[in-house]
Amino acid sequence: MSDLFDSSRPMDAARTLALYSRYYQDNGPALPAGRPEDMRFVESLSASLDGLEGLILDSYGVIGLGSAPIEGIVSLFDAAALRDMPVIILTNGASQPAARREKGYQNWGLPITAADIISSRDACYQTVKTIQAQAPKTRFAYLDRNVMPFDDVPGALYEDAPWDEAPWDEADYFIFLGATFWGAAEQDRLERALANTGAKLIIGNPDVSAPVDGGFTFEPGFWAMKAQEATGAEVIMTGKPFAPAYEIAFDALQKKAGKPLERAKVGMVGDSLHTDILGAKSFGLHAILLSSYGLLAGRDVTREAIKAQIFPDTVARLL
Image (cartoon, rainbow, N blue to C red):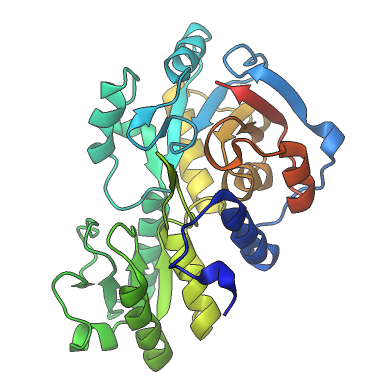
């Protein structure tokens, strides 16, 4: 197996980008053609909102890094408020419902309610409920200990059912919402179960990693790609960059605006070419890359965009 999947080595930005490129080359959404010269570079996003009707913001790498907000995020919300511009959050964090995140954002001085927070958890739930409706006897199992299962989707829980017991061997789908307590030992057991049973993986968080203070985490997208590489298991990704997450977010933004919005006039702000920008471009939004924080901090944005063949409409150095 490629060294890209060696979980004993710390994750970093270069490896994250390589994994995204490898996976989304064959598994990503369709991308409109673009050119490097089409990218517009601005110093401050807050001062560059003309022509936009609304904003969809990524969380990690745009609103905050680890436990701290990013400098300028309050000013961005203030600038949007002056223009009566609705703002919502679209995050690939899926382990907990939106209401669990509301207080943290408000503690940072941000005017965000639970209704403003859309996550890949919402898209994952839609996928699971569709499967459940088509096959009511489908057996689910939830991975990792630090996740809240869906209220009306029963399934074996990792923390409650040892791997050598029947619920794991009998699962038709494993639901992967978060990876806080996930590691090599758990991954080995999962890969054995996938190989032995032919079960499928539903990924609530397609991110390979997330930027935190001092480094990057391993997220469910990494473990899903690793499992697929090892076993050939079918993987169903349900968050950014795939359309269902953007459809839910766009509908929520229109509801908050109280009127229909034009997709090309809604800015999706993110730090990742392969999730935020790829997803935004394929959905028809105005794709805005924040370059000084998160995944691409300190990297040559133009070079990375050319390498990925994913070109944001706007590149903002600062919020």
